[in-house]
Amino acid sequence: MTSPPSPNPSEEESPEEAERAAEELLQFFRTLPTVARRAYEALAEADRTYGEDVGAQKRAAGAAKGVE
Image 1 (tube, one colour):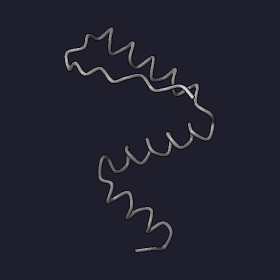
Image 2: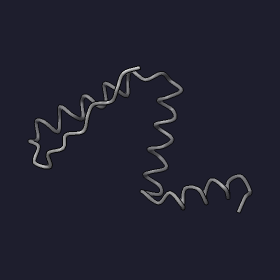
Image 3: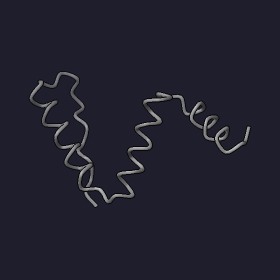
Image 4: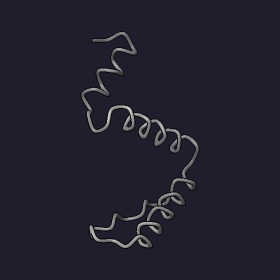
């Protein structure tokens, strides 16, 4: 399996560097097996819904299963 691109530790990256990093990330994502890609997509959807609130994610998952 391919490793994801390393994050750039510099907070002052140029727009070109940001574009290149984004393209590398897309290329990595496209090389993933379908099952792994679906797992990443589900995680991304949860992040869009709940942000970094892991507790809210767990509560929502429990509520969906009928668990409190």
